[in-house]
Image (cartoon, rainbow, N blue to C red; front, side, top):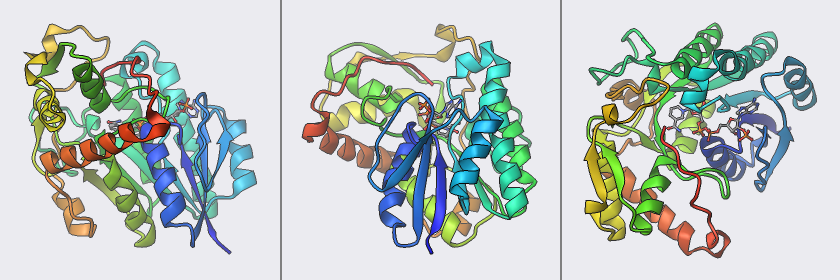
Length: 317
Ligand SMILES: NC(=O)c1ccc[n+]([C@@H]2O[C@H](COP(=O)([O-])OP(=O)(O)OC[C@H]3O[C@@H](n4cnc5c(N)ncnc54)[C@H](OP(=O)(O)O)[C@@H]3O)[C@@H](O)[C@H]2O)c1
């Protein structure tokens, strides 16, 4: 009998990519199930359930019905400013959901893979390793760290501290990468922060890394990112150059020029040496990863299914 893999948040950027890839790649060994809350998606080979993960009864019903062997928990309240405004909601979605899933895994000896964030680090000096003490600078990251602590109780759990750049599911929001692409395409001027530095991984790398985590029973906390580092301004320039857009549309700015409800850390770069030594995945440098996603985006744009992509919803994470 196939093992059952449950991915939460398959209507989000990462969950969608995982469900789509793992439904194909693991299909001989796993039946893949996914959850969404507000935004229905359809993914070939993945059974989709609508669940509000902040509601214990809904989570318990789901788990009773599916009885998953492995859970990859991607869903969270990712709107950083909303988390700052509403701590209760942030904890209800991000922390409580994790505790319900953790209880199930603990009781039934099942594996939990938790997607955490580079924002658990203080975010001023950069080059953080897993042994550095986390010090979240906003409430979103505090909730993510609380959830991590719940997951760590399970000895074979896997926690991946990520920053990701990618493409959103069709019709669902706009990522930072798409923000640059869509505005440059329309010839609009946009700010590019020169002081915000990170080393995000290309979303397309994560299905392979998570599959490895499942197949090789990798446990513990790992930073997952690209090699090197880049500012948000330079990321915009890389995208502009790849697509032949006017790079002067990206105006150099610093995050202090803008007022956000939640504090944004400026340097969350992570040392990924531990992941490099444990995973066989060949981590690439950030510019190679940007080019590789740009190729994907180009394919996606030329595909008929996305001819009407709505580029309206623009926000900054
Ligand atoms: N994107 C990044 O750069 C980044 C960086 C660091 C860490 N992460 C972490 O990576 C994970 C995935 O991020 P992402 O960017 O893919 O997120 P995303 O696109 O914002 O998607 C969030 C997902 O969570 C679901 N969700 C929200 N509230 C829910 C609720 N009450 N009940 C059930 N599901 C709920 C959403 O469902 P609906 O849309 O259907 O409501 C959606 O599927 C998150 O845990 C995030 O903290 C992301």
